[in-house]
Image (cartoon, rainbow, N blue to C red):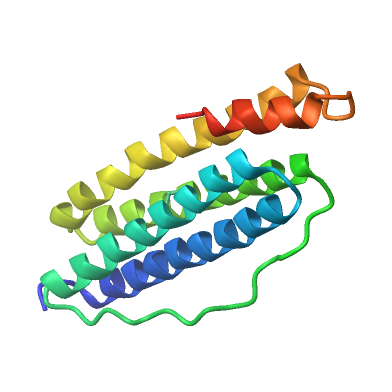
Length: 164
Ligand code: OFO
């Protein structure tokens, strides 16, 4: 393998984090769907698909570099949420945690002089910047549109689904 052991390990961890993110968003999509937020549900199903792609991208990279990609286990994820808004609070927290994980991979690459993997990970840096911005924008909309007013929920559902 052209991957050092520590790099292979941290990349497998990143693959698992992306896979977990996909499952978390899938549960959020289902909650949104069954609570009538059809547009935002579609948005979240799409996020789940995107995270699955992020997972596959790193998974394939490990293999391409001659390493051993480990299929991640699937833990239980949160299925119920207190409110529409809580979904986006959790989504933002999750994106921040993923960004931190990406940064750790890059720090490891630098420590191990693995500049090829560092370059590969830059795609994730850009992606995380975008996803954090979108999650923050969704929360901003909750400040602008009152969820508890007559058509507030409906309007939020429409506007959030238009992000990105
Ligand atoms: Fe994988 O991009 Fe967000 O988490």
